[in-house]
Structure formats: structure tokens, C-alpha cells
Length: 244
Image 1 (spheres, rainbow, N blue to C red):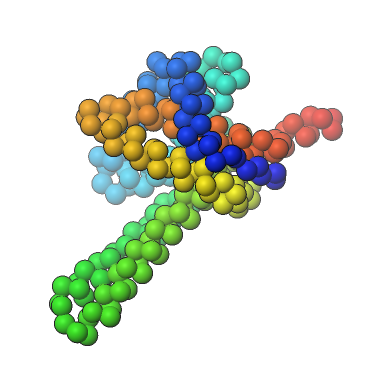
Image 2 (cartoon, one colour):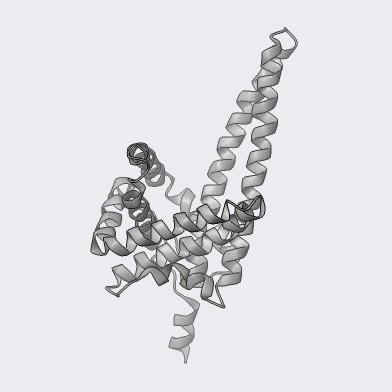
């Protein structure tokens, strides 16, 4: 699997690529974001099970967003049905759902770490005695561990979804490839993330309506990053066709 390194300025340049993708068909993009939100809202009304189900199917739905970005860049017509194409794909559906389970387990581990380190530190720091003061440092260490865990989860998932869906890469290899691609491009991706956090703050101000635009731009931008980082990879189907 060939991995390329992006220039540092791609950290903000990817937003331009995402915006160009969005403005090609803004109606479809806005509609699929609304549909995604409604699916999430309905499922989360179901106690416990709904949240688990949403977490499991999310990678397949994200792959649907990336399918829209891919087809727009290829000059093909897109529609809201693209959102559900990955989950309808008999070959890709199972690995995408398994990726959702991996993401869910990673999120649970991070939540446990947060409860152990942060909660424990707050409780010990509240006593204020001399014995607890050295132990309060565990809370700071715990925050570092949680932050690193977040970075690991991001690295695992950022590009594993498109690698599984577009290239047919095996689940384990896709996760490893995503981590390697993230590490090789950590500079521009950190810049990209910082810009996103700033834009997300402003997107939340008008009742979150800004995400109707920011969401599609970011999905298309992440797809663009995947294309630029893994441009040398080839789909297994293409190899088979050439050999035939």
C-alpha cells in the first residue's frame, strides 16, 4: 500500500477541495446530512440499543458520504440514495459494520479511561491533604493518556473506511494503513483539525445549522485527503480486470 505525504499547506487547502465538491451539488449534500441527523435522532431514542446500532452503522453511512464526494469528483450524477449504497453492498457491508464495532469498543475504552483517570483525580484532589497531592498528578497523566487514545482512535478510523469501501482492503490492513497514513501526514492533518474546530464553533452558533454546510465540506475534504495520501493504491478489482 503506497502512502504519500501531503504538503503542510494542504491542512487548509483540503477545505477548498471540499468546498468545490459541496457547491457542485449543495442540495444533495444538505439532504443527506439531514437524513443522517434524523437517523441518528431516531435511533438514539431507543435506550442503549439505539446508540450501539448507530455506532455500528456509522462507518457505512460515512462511506456513503464519501461515495457522494467520489462520484461528484468523477463528474457523475449523485442522489440521496448514495448514502445507503455501502450498507447495501454485499461485499463491503460486513467489514464496514465490523469497523463500527471496533470504533465502538475503542470509544468505550476511552470512556473508561476518562472515568478512571479524570474521575479519580478529581476525587483525590478534593481531599486536599498531603497524601493525595502526589496522587493528583495521576489525573494530569490520565488526561495525556486520554488525549493520546483519542489520537489513536482518529488514526485508526480516518482512512480505514474509504480503504475498506473503495479499495476492498482487509479490515486489519485498512486500520494499519490508516494509522500509517495519519502519521505520515500528521502536520497537515493537525492543521486541518484545528481549522475544523474553529469553523465548528461558528457552525454551532445559528442552532447548529452551519453544519449543513460544514459537514459536507469536511466529509468531502477527508475524502480528498484519502485520495491524495493513498493515490498509489489500486483496487483489487482493477488488478483482476487487467490480468484477465
